Length: 124
Image 1 (cartoon, helix red, strand yellow):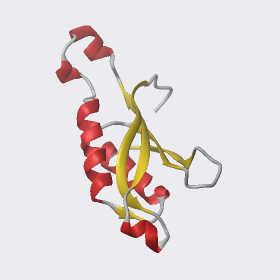
Image 2 (image 1 turned 180 degrees about the vertical axis):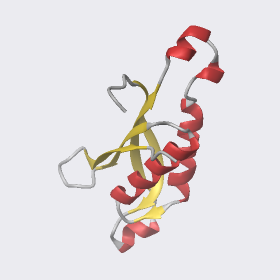
Image 3 (image 1 turned 120 degrees about the vertical axis):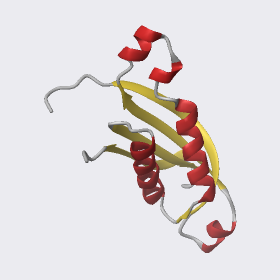
Image 4 (image 1 turned 30 degrees about the vertical axis):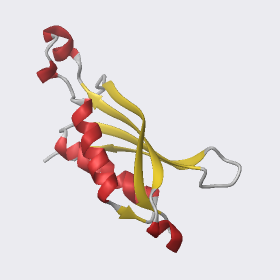
């Protein structure tokens, strides 16, 4: 594939309530999940046309993530992150994504714990 310069469209600190966790009590409540996304996209066409149809629609991406997270009941943030990445790679037709998920105050005396994953879209 050679070296490919990649622009990034990002969403930071998207707060979504979800049922997530390994403990029984966590399966009965909703907890806040913080989502950060970096999505690879070539912005040159949009920069030239100044037309929204040439952009990566970050509002649509955020809505897809919200819908997935609000309906999900994963035990692990690792599993949720993987599902978010797969969904956006497919539905938004992006070549690369970095997903960071955090659970605030999941560990005593910490602000947040979580995972960051990077995935590329498989070529058909």
